[in-house]
Image (tube, rainbow, N blue to C red; front, side, top):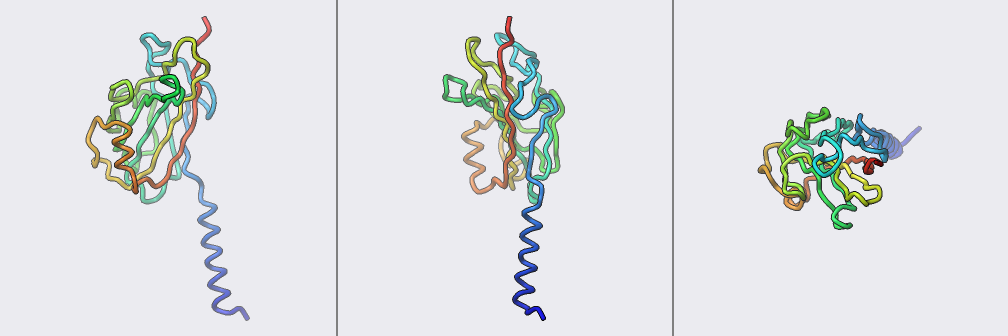
Length: 182
């Protein structure tokens, strides 16, 4: 006969195992594969190649108590290694699970923060012409903050300060941008 203590221990182990088997929070892009090349069309335009078209992104398996998301796109090699924040969007409703192509460009479905270029909204890849491959990190953060809690135009540093103690999980992917050969 199994004792009550052994039965309780077994039930606890089963619960832990079920939690461990939950799918991880993940971020996906339909325009490129993780660690793959970003389409040239995503480039910032102007002095850079591209049309400043933001990618289609989707995510799944966010924590159940997610109220909103924050999305960052950063080039850690930008500004000669000091890093460049190309995009910061927050106030993304916790029920949302995707952005269509151009949504970030058109400021659709999020509150725009101010990026390193002092732009509110999407600013695509734009490494120096003579640069090697630049990696663009896409990070999606699930939070317990209400979607309307943060004011428009905050910098990355201001948003990160507000997230302390409120970040539930993160998901990410990396895309590489290379100037097309002429």
